[in-house]
Length: 357
Image 1 (tube, rainbow, N blue to C red):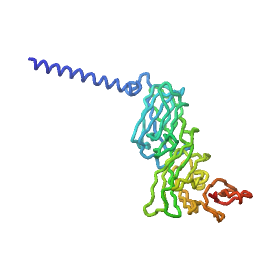
Image 2: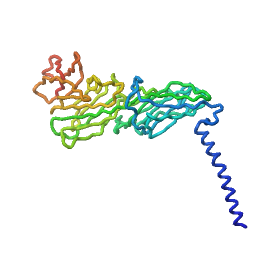
Image 3: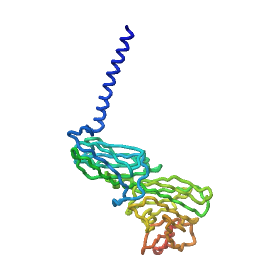
């Protein structure tokens, strides 16, 4: 008799548990969907679906489309620009992806970051507190403003206000543009050399909610190095840097194995822009190949397989020289030669010159 009673109690308790589980699941669903479910949307807005399109900085679609993206984050702000919530997803092929946003009726705007990783840090975003104007992103760097690892591929998108209405499903497309750039630097030296130190310096590590660069301290990008086994004269440096702007003073610097600065050139106006086929609105992969003589004077420069014409400099016999490019004259590369005091009578200009070290 005791055994039968014991079994009945177990069955009764199980029946109670099975009744509770659907209730808990339903409550959880309501919570996660901000109080709106498809079957009963009384007092709620229609379903909003977000699609994504890869575009250049002018909004023109680009092909091929997105690579697989590890992380997609959509930040929702209300009509006053107050943060509402964040929706995430991962391991996506954005060309064929759609995100559903169950939102109460109202007016919303969206900020999208695709590719977020440990390389980046978002500003604080607290629901019902953070304003759109205070929301941004920063590239992580060390205390000395060095970026020692390659940042992950990053995209940004912004969609202006849209009204979510009751019982009306809508579909919108958010244009995403690429923020990061791959720069492949190949350096050939006249003789076999120990590892050169190569860096890119820029002031492009901070961004507002629109994906526009904010002022900040200059940062120094460090690459991943490699050397062909059959070419001891060659060093390869692979960079992934943030947004490039044609009016910025971005610098490519090359140091000797003894850590002496030998080459300091404007990356954009002095190198990349020399290739007329490059479109900074849509191109994000660049190869810079430089061949130096034994004094670190460039004798050959190629940008994305476009050879840049270098006019030979007439240099004094007392080299060694250091290549310190800076000044342009009459549409041609002109460089200043810094001469010893006893030779400095007037300013002397030499095409692609250098400073005597």
